[in-house]
Amino acid sequence: MADDLDIGGTLKVIEEQINSLSEKIKTGRIKDPKHEEIRIKMIRTLGYLSKTYIELLEAEKLEELEEEINKIKETIIFGK
Image (cartoon, rainbow, N blue to C red; front, side):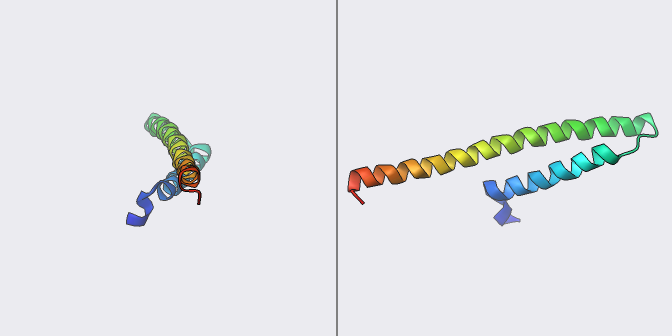
């Protein structure tokens, strides 16, 4: 599990949960109000996970861009 703590691993876990929750929301049968309440909570959780997923994707992209910028700076400064 420690290997999954980087952004890529976290994205994978969240993506799996988003897919799982989406499927449960689509196929779940609601027979009583208590189940409807649980379904609503699942939808809220899905929204939260989706937002977190997007934020992590953006953070991952920023890290990649930062690495590229640093390589360019090294090339300019040291002529490598």
